[in-house]
Image (cartoon, rainbow, N blue to C red):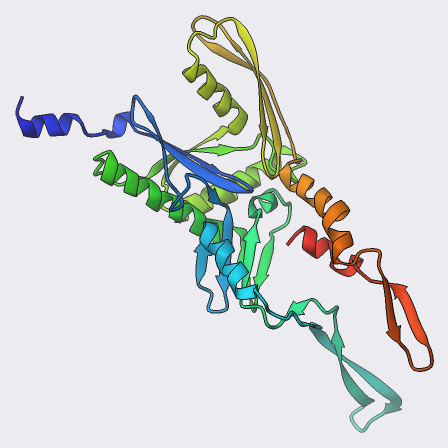
Length: 325
């Protein structure tokens, strides 16, 4: 065998290559199977795991992962937040008299303002946990300053970055020269917020659209707890005639799988998933521990025209925004 032939034999070929992606509510990961070994993909400079975060600045430039979080923190460090009221429209009052053209005479025109939730000094918006919105029965659009972004537009940059990391590992370390267009994609048994199968179908459809934009042309979808069960069986081939329970507790969902393994095959007995995850634990910690430090339940004392006014600080106006930012 020549040296050139030997080099070719060590290359990863398309028929033995497997690519797996876990786009998670909190974090994302990816792996490559070269036919004999699983290689975890380095998605961050110093980590295999990438936060599922997207940051969009005022010029609509997008950053992802840990860089997104760092840019958001840096742009807000030491900044004074001033909330302004959103202009909802205008209202006109009438004098009650009919004018020359048969129309009511206008007395004055006033702008109608909403609640003071507009942060005019904000340099960018950070999005985390966008996966939680995929199964909504309505078309969700998130405002970034003056533009409305679809969920797909916020997810696609994350997937494109994952694809770039996969391609780099394949070319630089596994000597794989062909373009990477396929992936096995994990998904929860039931997406958060899904009440019926149609919501899960919609979530998969939106995910598929985002993966297509990220140039994953061939996509295979697989329930995450079943994939975890099969991974365990692959690592423990002597596990025979046993019943396994797999628990996948993620940021947005809790997924379960019961699987039976016999000598030659396996059977998935049941799967189930609910929209309850680590984000909900974080929310409870915020409510019970953090919010009292930020003013929840405190008395608000200020000077009035003729007396001192004391009321409960209106923390509930901001509570849901902090929990679901």
